[in-house]
Length: 333
Ligand SMILES: N[C@@H](CCC(=O)N[C@@H](CS)C(=O)NCC(=O)O)C(=O)O
Image (cartoon, rainbow, N blue to C red; front, side, top):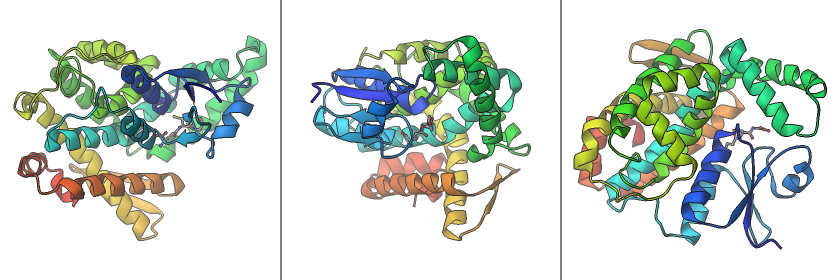
């Protein structure tokens, strides 16, 4: 039995670094174990699904899926809390965490695998991490194999010729809005990190390491860059703010970005429910079409989960007003 948690993960996995950043902030004793050829057998003892992260607990259990992992650890180690105490702010933070995991991942994954320069950069780093003891020459065939396989899988996040411009303009606009919001504050909800920071950061930090998306982040988001570095090892610098001070710059992000994501997610859930193999939805006057298969079932499940969280607090009048004003409410009920 080990005394600390072990996080089996990968530096290029947004959900892995999200989990690591959370453990660091919480001060929960843990070891980061890069999942690679040397650690694979140990990782497999804890991973029911072939994904990272997988967390091995000191009791010898395996945890997977970053959102429930964070929730499990939060219940066990409630301080310092990552949840603002007002019901409305706590829900918005959980909604933004969901947004990061699901829509932020479209930004990151699309940019990583759409263009040759990014494909090569990511494939090289992935293989270097997986085969730490191999030479350049030994890694080369696997790098090429991963590059072509992942480039061919870009459709799993719904990226295709028609949706690429929607994803790219959403990323650029999202960065602009985030940069305004993070100018003058350390974290999304004020002076300390919230649940939202971890989900969104994992994706944007990964995008920042890639050539094309990274250049965009550096160009458009000086405050986003500072937040990216801060979130690698976050610490509380103050308190959570109130909605009154957050609203001027957070409300536009909810209205433009989170609403768009929820419109997509609701349409996706409906397509799954109807057993459709194609999803077509109008997103602010632009048509988004993609095939629907196994991976989209996960999004439908997580929409159900965020709707369940909303149902538990739907009586809060402040939250209702915020969500209504941002156009998010119809998708949550
Ligand atoms: N919902 C999961 C998603 C985890 C996930 O998709 N992990 C990816 C990497 S970011 C993965 O492990 N893919 C297969 C692989 O890399 O072997 C979570 O939040 O933990």
